[in-house]
Length: 104
Image (cartoon, rainbow, N blue to C red; front, side, top):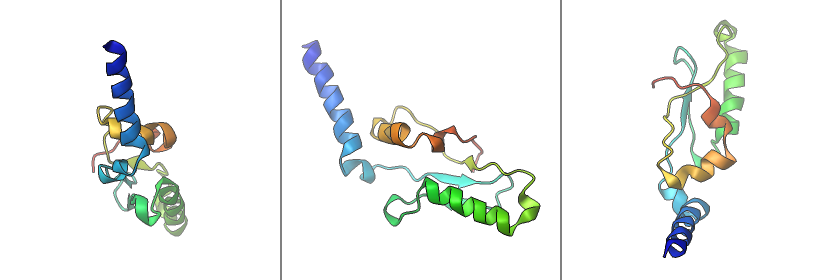
């Protein structure tokens, strides 16, 4: 019985993370700089991913040299490990979760 339960739980977690179902429940990841003058929202289907957020932030810093005193990019979303359908993002995109948190 325990083996069947464990296999069922693993199957549900894998299906929730590796199928298109994960896109239905996906949280929008948002980022900003320290003073809020730069903001970015990730949209998975439009190509606005974390890599694009970093690229746009570099462009922003280049265009606004006065903002270069604090060059950190902050995440404005909280990490919710109980959302098992996002564990794929934790594993395959860990850089976004390593950013320091700043309230939106």
